[in-house]
Image (cartoon, rainbow, N blue to C red; front, side, top):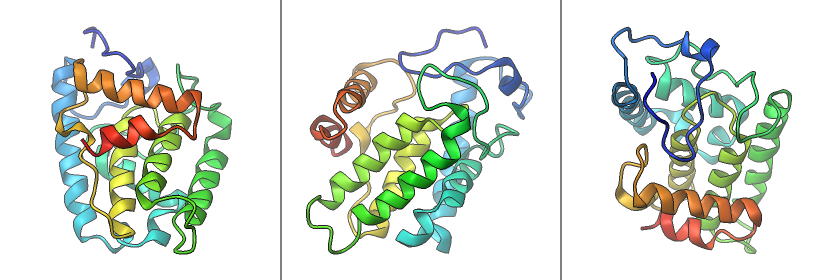
Length: 201
């Protein structure tokens, strides 16, 4: 695929591109279509799977990988497998498993019923931001982190987020607003005001 990447998108390396399953994909638009179909399938799976229902099952390192595999398993052979190469964002690949485990362990503390210092919505948005910051997978990290946050929200009894109500795959004002909110949180991880506002817009 030689068409340009939208701002903030992660380039796919040659080794990872070789893991593409559908043979007809030639453009980024083709890729977005097959990935969207996989995400829709993952949402149906999550609506009926016990693994996607409870806080304890969602906030686990195996579930992080399982959700990515459900979303992209028909598109990429490496779906659910952590990236092995450096990216323009994210932690060192060698640190990904520990970073993900630390995140889900911390999130259990954040969403505990007696954790009154932070609201449930902020909990979920913080998890989303930190998952994006880790960037565990070669591709699909933003969409994975948004669905993960939605499932976590549902498990603690709050509505899923709307994330601007738009397709964030391509360039446009919604994607620009979302990226600006993420970058503000990158500069100060405690400043999630813009990201929460966008998530609920």
